[in-house]
Image (cartoon, rainbow, N blue to C red; front, side):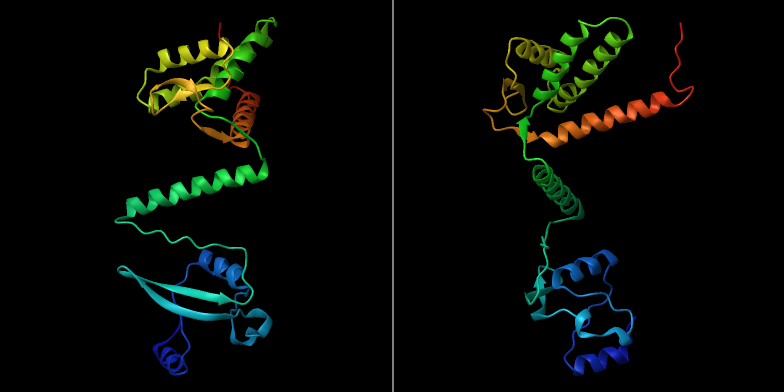
Length: 232
């Protein structure tokens, strides 16, 4: 809260005041310029303040932004300025950037890439089905159900691409049975191709995390009494 009188004297002293800053922006600015949030005048100490060569208000289209350059102790932060014609375009661009950053984060945590296009899920489903044939009783049923559940990924991918999910997944399963482990759904061509040759890859951590979390969720549900009922 800054009064008009305070703003008047600060302007005479050539001190810029930026009002109405979100809490998350305060944390980001502190990390960027190496300062700490100060709640009262008693805490205006040199070790709590940041330093920069220039702080200016820049006009970008119909809006204004505050640009800070020449930071003495820059933090490990990056500012991405997104502009768009309307709010929907901005939100979509924000989601796309967030997804790209998550992919990079996954690659940093585990540096491994696998084929996309539903290829790993189909191959894993095929291998589990083969292993299920070597078992008997309830274990065989569980492994087979797990293998069928993995086919949800290529089925959903085919549906989203406007393809026939049954015919597409059947062909994909046959190609993997013939030994084509990198065969996947090519959304652009609308066919089953060697997905690695199309440079369609995904981080290994994405697939392993999805399978792990889904398995843990099912285990948690089955442990709850009266949720899974065995009716004759």
